[in-house]
Length: 280
Figure 1 (cartoon, rainbow, N blue to C red):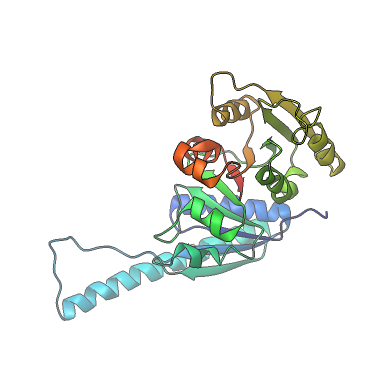
Figure 2: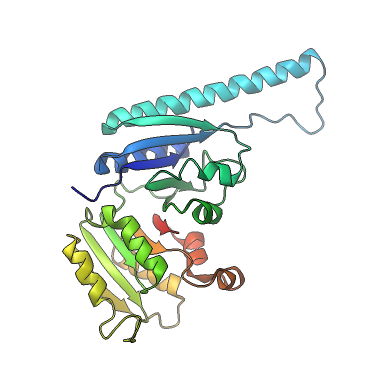
């Protein structure tokens, strides 16, 4: 198959939530025949109470116990990665980064990957983690999976949000390896009207034809938002279609507008109960 993800990275740790997101990433890597990079930020360790003090040998003992706890957590994380790799028959590597590592430094670990997988709330990430900052600095698409998501599948039934913008087109390209392997893909347009220079005379038809030529099982759906926001309309339609993944391009409007008015990107990131494939 020509359309495959080759390198997938995942932030995880040895917690239950960390193992859950690791298994999601490993399952996807197995389906895509991809190399998996497991990234874990070393925990800062247990913090002493604010009114506690340690001096001399006692201070050394506290430091030793914290280091031992970190070593144990990292050992468990590495073992979890090895088990997941064996279960899904994939090659994997383990990277440990400082908990205090900056967001821009952390982005370097994702820079040479096709996809970065993260949990929501995030686990295994550095102190300065920010989804929006990672999207802006790395240029790598994110698959964000809520901790409340317990379905065995991600990406079998996809809703692809399309508004004929540059970010939406980038999302199509980034997600194509998942789109071609999905059982169904709903190409979703919200409040789309025939418009020269954007949608054309038949909104979504050209993109649907493009996807079909790539082997995507696509169905065009154009709906009105009525009294709901675009993000609410997308989520409602995804729920009605029993989707297990929403694909969209981030920041279709000006960044200033996003910052001031919120926007579809922020609303989906804040409210989606479904996994999100977010393309920068």
